Length: 514
Image (cartoon, rainbow, N blue to C red; front, side, top):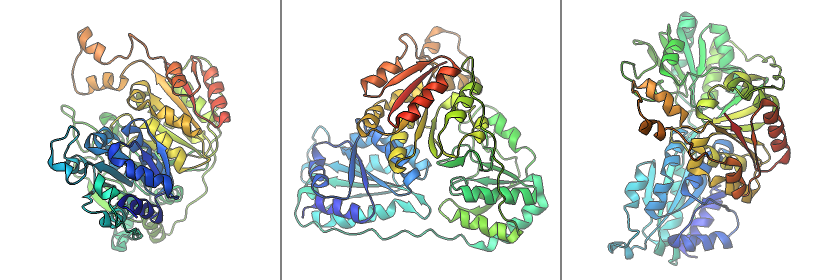
């Protein structure tokens, strides 16, 4: 077999079942091998940012890495923003990046680039294949590197074209990754601190604790028993919610609100979470959200068995999780479209076990309060702050959780970054309902102006923050990509559009006029 064939055999044998692809000339032998050899399904994205964002969403729901196929350094660069997001989400991805043949690299060809340097800016592991007979072993190492205990990492394998077409390929299998148990020595001391400090202590959930419904229930029981506060990080890769699940507040995005929420604590216990830091620096405001002098205690790091460690803490305290009373779903709203009526419409219509993709930005922040009454669901937030993740993330989540309905909440500015994902939804006939909040502005930046103390006095700056003249026609944009769409201007029509979209079990876009 050639190197490309050994790569496909290795990926399939190592549990990589899906490849999100945007290939070019250097990857043609890998494309041919994917066609001939069963085991790895291919999904085409029309832009590399769709490919990498979809791989992120896939990991979050499937719990295993997908491969991406990208063309040389510039193609990798096109996908870099969503790889940044994936890294912050601790998602595992195996990037395969075609490159010029080894002999050709000494020439200054038009697409020559430093692929290793470009990949290294967002990858935890990077390797360039040097011979066809090494490709399989390198691929197995990449799959292994894509997992760090309970969380994922970004692994990038650069495949020079001649190592793909060269003979002598040998398949390999990636070694299984174990989830390390955190040393339990700290558990008795943390249990004592939670008892003693009570409401002055905060148990903060992050990776593993936020993502697991049983872990959430354990954390809620621990908080009820000790009197400590319980919160989750604002940005969560996956957070269960809805009826029958604990209602766990998140640290607010806005600095002033976060400082107010954390005021009075003197002990912060991290359960898969990180020390809470503000998203940006603001004049006269702190970067750390916890009060000065707060003791920082680590119960478990993200790569550890966070649910198991929470169980150990609950055992030390002698508590067991209790059933959570159901919150009744909100009634169908009527009247004007407001943050409250939009939230009620979503909570009222959301199907059981839906996956919600949140890149709603300013509009999306007001939805959390109503979602406790929604059907049980998983909430996936954009991580890393690079916009343009929501539509690709919905593609990956739908493929990573087959059969589950997906709702993508999108700002109109964010959606324009990776609009091509609509085409992939249509080609794959994915059950994704997209809500585009059309306020025709970069509304979040209008708010950030105030946060950093800047003022706008002229039309030049205002024009840089608006999306009108011309206004975007989202229904036409969706239909042009093969996705039917409707525009709604009232709560009643929003409820109907959501019901129709979920019932279709196919791609559907709703433009919400704000």
